[in-house]
Image (tube, rainbow, N blue to C red; front, side, top):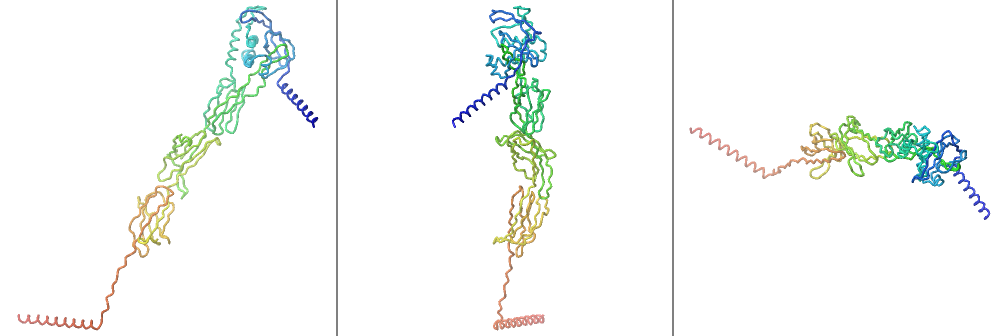
Amino acid sequence: MIKINKILSVLLLIGTIFCNYLTVNAQTTVDNLYKDDNYKFWVATWKRDGSDRVATEESMIRRTSDNSPVYCIQAPIPFNSGSQVNGIVDTNTMSTMSGLSNEQIERIKLIAYYGYGYEGHEDVNWYYATQLLIWSVTNPGYTYAIADGDHSLTPSNRYDAYYNEINSLVDNHTVNPSFSGQKIEMKAGDVVTLNDTNNVLSKYYQGYEDEHIKATVNDNNTLTVIAKTGYEGKIWIEAKENNNRPMIYEGANQLCMNIGDPDGQDFSLIIHATTRIEVTKTYGSKNDGVYRPEKGAEFEVYNTETNQLVSKVITDSDGKFTLDLGYGTYRIHQTKGKDKYDFVKDYTITIDGSTDKEVIFFKNEYITSDLEFTKTDFSTGETLPNTTIEIYNTETNELVGTHVTDANGKVTIKNLGFGKYYILEKNAPEGYELNPEKMYFEITKSGEIIKVNMKNHKIKKVSSYNVPNTATKSSLSDVAVCLVIIVVVGGAFIIVTNKNKDNK
């Protein structure tokens, strides 16, 4: 078991060493460097205090693989032409090899980039000026200048313009586009084109795309941004992979550097892409199913988190309004609408970037409520069936409908429309007086049950009395006596009357 563990440990060690070997070699490039004696120049060198003035003849250095120019970075050390060298691209490794700081390494990379071969810098004098500027950074204790003549110690100012331009380009170097970090206001579905006045976008950067935003880098240093949905936040535009990074070569008795492209740096844009909501407002009745666009309906939109009013909107002739909203939750509240129609209930919508447009339909229903009519006995409260009632519109006095109470003494009318009404009894139930009173009620909002109770009195019965039957014998005799008296008195009256006539 111990032997197996030892074997495994050895294999692990070998694997680790092999992997490290691959990693190191993946970061290096083998090439050959040589002097191009077709391009020679004299350099005057002296310490900053003016002492130790010397003049040396230098030549352009190239690498064999592509004959591109290379610069020495260790001024006092002779260069061995034709040497095989290893190129290193990692800045930290460069710093360790050369003893230079990372800041020095980055500056000489930029001097090489903006020097000989840069746009407008094709003349060989740019190479000479570039080499001297690199030495002034790597060996700052000395001053370097192009000499006027062979072995001359008199520096020339003929190259001051070269130095100044290269230093200016380095000092103002940027790989970030001019719109880096800007906030872009747009709407979902919009296309925005950004122009990079720094002219670095196309060279250093690649596009970006996710489910919300697509950003395309064009060849003319413009960026086309498309908001596929609403979005609020940062997007990062990543730099292209740099396949032409500058390298420091070792192996020619001194360190040299080739010309390479600076690395791009990822940059961000702040995107505020609002989502458009499109609301269509109609009014009508579910009774007939006919709905029409409502012009002039007014709404207020509030942010639910802050309860802050975001916007006031009014529907157009097509019953529509549109509004662009950023991320958040909102409450849509109706404040004005068509008479006799309900307002829509408050509507809540969340904008979260899940879509490029929200389409909403609102219906205002005609205001209706239910009528529940009950007919009862005035005294007992007993419900009375078979009562005929008529319902009239108070304003127009138009008959709305005729109804008869059911076995429970009720009439129920569903979805009676907005307005003022009265109820008139047409036929009373049997045995009851007709109630002449008008019963008024009003419907002003939907969903109510309007309850009306009408009471009726019973018809009063006329009392009948029987004449007592007293026709007994005694009573008959009394009648006879009365008749005799009447006859006697009447006869006497006639006699007296006749005598008076005779006496006359």
